[in-house]
Image (cartoon, rainbow, N blue to C red; front, top):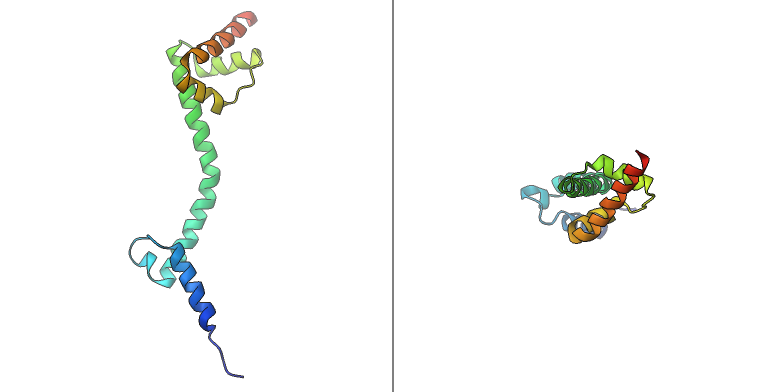
Length: 121
């Protein structure tokens, strides 16, 4: 039986690979060996950063909430503590959205947290 060299299957695999590496700089988007390395490394970054994105957004929301609290003479930690005591179950994403887009509603949430803290003391 004659030896085969994968023929069209290899060519299709190479085309698939170069399609994924499209737009990469220099040889990374044109040569199979380098493109394969770049695509594999890109997949590693994508996998890692899908998890990282969740952390980054949480940090952003906390920063926004903290800035809004500071404008209302309250620290972030006291604010969160007051919300827990007042049993307000808004998550950080919702709180950040309210702080950014509806200052009056956020004032009400801060007032509730402040009242719960004062009731404790």
